Each structure stands twice: as C-alpha cells, then as structure tokens.
Image 1 (cartoon, helix red, strand yellow):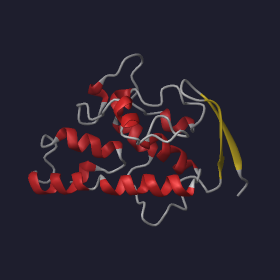
Image 2 (spheres, helix red, strand yellow):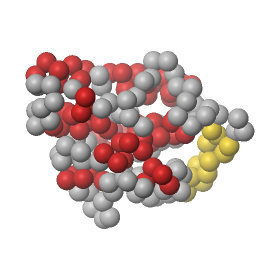
Image 3 (spheres, helix red, strand yellow):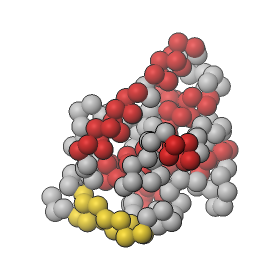
Length: 169
C-alpha cells in the first residue's frame, strides 16, 4: 500500500496533516469491531445532521451521497431515532475526551481510523472508550422488548453515534 498524506483545511483545522498507513476499512485492532461504517452512520442520521458538513474534501464523496445533513442549524429529526443524543463539544473538552488531532471527537477519530490513519496510543484510548459504550447495549437489552424502537430512543441514538447498530437490539 502506498502511504498517502491527507491535508485537512476545514472550520476546525487548517493545514493539519496525517498519514494513511492501513487500507481503508481494514486492519482494525482485533478489539475494535464497529457494527457500522462512517458512511452507514451518516446515511442513518447522526448528530442532528450537523457533523462533518464542512469536511467533504477529506472523506470519500460516497460517504455523503445518502448522508442526512442539515443545511444550516442542527435538525434532530434527521437522526435515525429523531431525538438528540449528544452533549455539546464544550462538555467533551471539559472532560478531556478530545484529542488535539481530532477536535470534533470520537466520530472524527473513527472516520480517520477507518480511512487508515493509525496513532497507537490514541487508537488504544478511543477503542477503550468505544468498548465502554457497550454498557448502553446491555441497558436496552434489559429494559426493552426486542425491536421496540420507541424504548430508550436517546440511548439507541447514542449507540448509533458510536457505530453500534441499535436497530438489532
């Protein structure tokens, strides 16, 4: 594989560079088994349609072909479960969850990881966080009838934000 350099110029990063060292969508850490690709997540409806609206140049056009994106302000009706399930970025910053290379948070890390960027220490940290979200799967399994998408909609939407397919529960 030819290692490619990606240069990012969007609203949150100017001149940020990273190297793709793994094939797109492959060679994931064995402990990281997301159920949804970034493209699938965007098509289902996540983050009230306001995530990645200015990052189209960084990622494949196919990711945005069916993406549910809001043209101006957030529109939570675009989310698969029709509810908001996000905390403001300011909360993520306060809690120390944001890495300087990924100022938008976990989903930005996942998109870049999916594309083939690898950062050993940060990848380990983010995969640990992804695994911890699994507790929400257990809560839905314990408290909802299988396939009842009206049960715990906010939790189900949050799981979609973390690449867990809560439609399967």
